[in-house]
Image 1 (cartoon, rainbow, N blue to C red):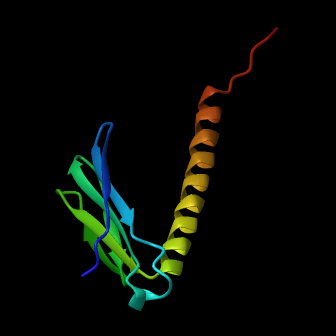
Image 2: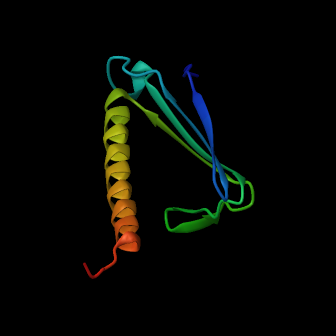
Length: 108
């Protein structure tokens, strides 16, 4: 079993989502070198959340949690790049929605 330092934050809005993440990478290679990356989403309160694993749907809305453990240095790197892509897309889409909400036409 590998040791990984984890950081956790609770994000509160109309729901509460706890996020935990950490890695001990780089460790010098593939899974056999001991590199591990850990990611957990936990429904603390009111988070409507469903995951699909191999086409099987699992409802995590009642205090559920999702954990992902990756093994290897490049797995950490590709996961990190994937999360940057996710953040970029969501930021752009949320900003587009906010701009549409705030758009109006006025006579001047």
